[in-house]
View (cartoon, protein in one colour):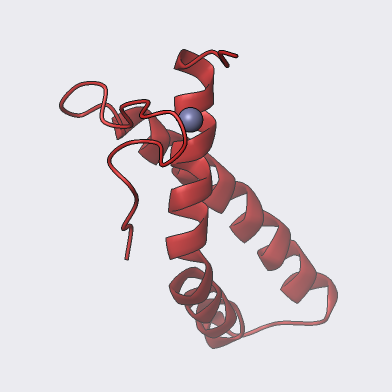
Length: 87
Ligand SMILES: [Zn+2]
């Protein structure tokens, strides 16, 4: 999980700009996941969920399945803030 190239296969742009660079990416993925969990919990509530398990089970499955992708997308977003396109 979380494997990515250390530099661009196309132009050689370094993807690890400094140690801890992707802490910001972690904050982005945290924000995205909290937002999606809130939406999911609202959906469960509207569907008539009453017991804690109605919320915990689907949200746990959702997190396990989507976290690797959300982490990578968040890193890409974070990187795109600091790296400008060159041509
Ligand atoms: Zn490139």
